[in-house]
Image 1 (cartoon, rainbow, N blue to C red):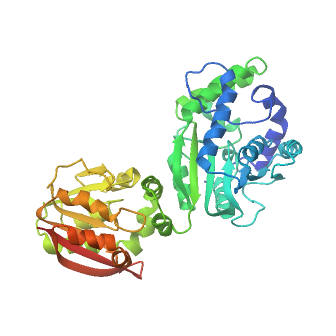
Image 2 (image 1 turned 180 degrees about the horizontal axis):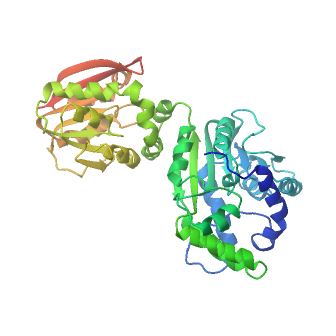
Image 3 (image 1 turned 30 degrees about the horizontal axis):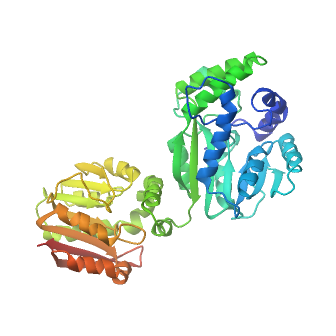
Length: 465
């Protein structure tokens, strides 16, 4: 994201001068963010502050902040969220803001809570005055759209987070690139920022920087409701603001403005991150987050595995129209390798919907299904496939060996099963070898190769008896 024509000095002046105005109708305590509504049909202005509190609770619940956490609050404003976080969890909170007025207000408020671990500092999100890996969490509400160089701010957030740390935030987005004159005037120029990321491009940028998006949520209907109610609250004193907020609602309806939530984890080594997974939902979320980067990052070091596995199947299966199930298909690397060899009837199944969406675009599969291998797969009848191929699926933090019992019935009598596994996983996992021995198949071939220059792999080819 390029720098905008607006400066942080202009934004600082805007918020230094507008604090008392917003307190008069938005929130007398000085909070300045949007609401999360149980009922989007709510029509009373009294619902707005309750919805703002509900949004605080939702973000806290998703963040995992506890009494051991050290939290950086970016755009802390008058310190309300920092005080609330420290009260609710016992965590340490460090707040930054570019408005000296609001930092002074936050420091004055902190004096009323001497038992809480809080401090506040005037600083820019693009140049954080903190050491590398200083914080377990970074928290931000309704702030980053104001930062003149958002990519630089995201890089700084990544720098100050610990490995495995959490970045939880919301921000305004620009869902579509074609904007009306009214949107420019009443949204972007009025609030001193330029069109920003869409939700998808935001997630991609975060992932590129090593902040893997575990959850992304479009909150635009709640933004619309927030400004609908704020327009009512502003009307008695500020008819111009009332009109501007109505125009903002119109911009949201035209998808010229939106609001998104992101929950991210700092990840330095994505493979270790994947292998350390302990439950299926986390694994699904991680692969969803990795999907758009997966092929780019693993193309050279990993693609040998699907290519060698497809060639292992080719040795025993000459029929190019044979029905093949690609188990744990991911982004479709195995499907591509099979298609390159001439196979045309390939079905994909994977835990991650986002990985499957990448695979779908490659147009090498006849059908794609989302499914958990640990459960009965109901998208096909038993004895449906001439071959099943599983590459890198039975490994640390992934499918357990017991899942072979769910796959085996899908294979026709005389069909082939290519099982590609890490050599160390195969040698160390007695349960895997025991189940392999129990199943009614015979080993036809065993190919050995390496990925990532050093990691030994086995491609085991079995035939069902």
